[in-house]
Length: 179
Image (cartoon, rainbow, N blue to C red; front, top):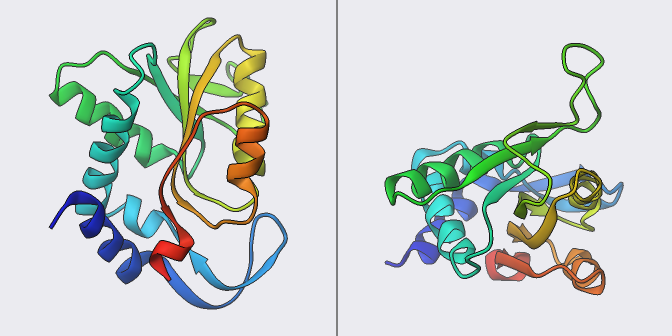
């Protein structure tokens, strides 16, 4: 079985929940994708890291990977681990929902420098709002967004929005692949 097919099995088994849910976008849904149940599973996270790194390596100028905390946290760790195993230099960062009010007061944590070429990762997107908020913070910090990558796209407008704004976009799955 290939990586993508195995990852689909894990997502279907662990992360797709049925019921009545209110999404981050405010929309109501009869299913919820809890990506953390797969990104916090050793096999699932390893597969995600491998698939994402393969896609990242298609653009040799990318030198940094990150995204909005919490969805991106394990993904970033996995991609960096896979890169390290292959002796590929790659840095990582996380974008907070808001800047800390103590310590360094940072909005962006980790290894991000002005001029970095970044890929923004997330577990699940609906309309893309949280990813766009992170992108705007990154651009303000002087980073260039090379690609947006997600595990599952709920097919509710995020892809079109990212492409309309000029961002290269990759999703491992669309929700129609999993339901």
